[in-house]
Image 1: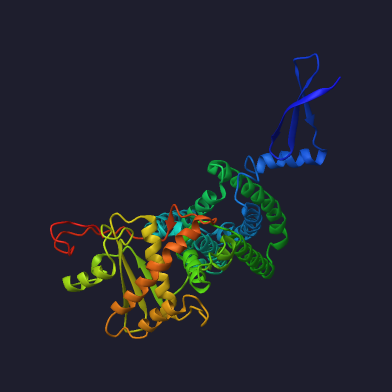
Image 2: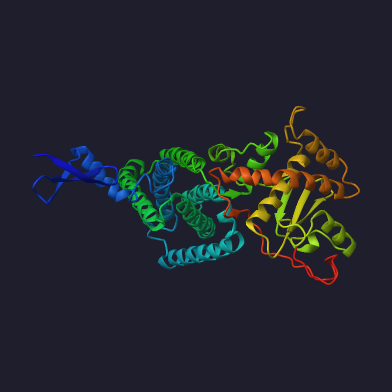
Length: 463
């Protein structure tokens, strides 16, 4: 009796079964492929700890990130237990002369300061957590180590336990806000099948399993390290190093296809240096810094500033609108830009956006800004045989003398942007980069021109 294969179906990468119809029978027979014993065990744990459809339902960097994230969670759990022991000793646990009321008051103040710190940090930096999720994720874990170190020192400053715990609580509140928000941003990046909830839930299961393993280790370590401060500090230093290194590797392996200022700046610079070459997603992410920058940069770019940051007089405003035509006259040119140099020779690039500015407009404005940044910093590497060397040299020459203003610089750079930015957009269409939205961190300031300043009588226009 011969059979005909009607259909074959799979469930994930392990389960497969076929439907066969034999002659003289209308019934469909199911032929199952039985997985091996170890394969079945692997499937069982995959269903518990991995998102449905893994690896197709998650980003390509998911596995590496989760491995390093689990390592850092284990190390953090170990150091956290060491700190807890020190905190309990500092507030008087085991000390018959300690006051229960004093310990309770300390705990209440600690929690209250943490709540206040959480609200304040979310107010000051909440929006920035979306734009630079890698940097803030690593920064949060560094702060977590600092907070644990403060708690570890409690037993040596029993007279100052309350202020020390309040400070550590504020630091940990920042960790909670930054860590939770950036974790959500990374989960959104990892979920490729509209499965954010599943990815988040399985991440929680993985972290719980890691913490359970660390809990068992902590039970053993507490007995071994009891009364031996040198071993406690050595273990803390070792686990802190592991924690920082694992976090650095975790955020460094994340490959995001969306543009923030850092990634877009790297891509624009390569585009200019290589005469139109679009850098791959992996290449750009590998060169993106994951450290929060301290201090003021030599060139600062401000996207979405008030109009007063660009022009204070009607004459100057009219002059600048000649360099940046309105959206009605020339579609897409819906921004104004000004380069300001202060007494310390630091530069501010201020960009005014239209109320009707699109993602394309923001990308063009930032392309212009990054062109100026590379010229002002003199970091653009262009050889004499570069096909765009004449245009770039004009911009560099104009940037040499800004004593009389930035008008000549804007004219030269505007001409280069008009010529090469459309090429950038066209090249991005066939790449892995997403251009449907950007994370440039623009503020909410938007401008709408009135009739008097439009330079076009009888008609209002939008910039």
